[in-house]
Length: 78
Length: 223
Image (cartoon, rainbow over all chains, first blue to last red):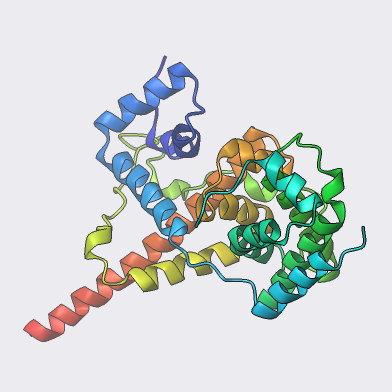
């Protein structure tokens, strides 16, 4: 089985992070990672991107909408 | 946030008109639902209306919940269908006919010119490694970085934006997202992968621009 190129490695990071690579592909991925500083950095940057995505602030439902829904629940026909 | 009771208990309490149970769900899930709705429609007001319409449909339809999926997945599917109808009325450029990847979602996610060509010494390998980023601890720019990421997400094609919102912003697992959107794991991964690569690319551009700015500022100080 041949070694991965960097251009192939970058297309596998999502499958790797989802633990969705078959055993052979995962071994080649990890072997490449162990040897390639550029790809290690790329994977770290994808992880950092994911972390930042998880830190995005949420909006909240406007109070009026919440009140409308609570009264709709209370008054719903049976 | 207090832990929610199990689904069958929740569903029974909703059917029995237990207002406390409804309030609990409304407050626990609405923020995440808003964010997901916002990935389908173009304004915050529309997103709030989608969430409101979804809850109204849940109130009316709770008798039909059979427990074949989790209650939350069932609610999110109603949200996705409501949002798609709404997005269609808003005349978006991409119609919500399908969550399937299209030609837009194929091809390399990193610019091929960054790797060696067939005649280079190391074909397919980085010509130049990606530049290092400031570590999260040293990011006095954290707020600006989040703004860049939010802007990048807003620029994604609809299908990619919905998937990355559910997976990375809301933190759902692959199985849950496939179930909510009724797509295969492979298709979901294609969309997520492109979306992440795009957002990383925007951050890379941003850090490069900020880095140059810092260097040139330092240059001015020392000269």
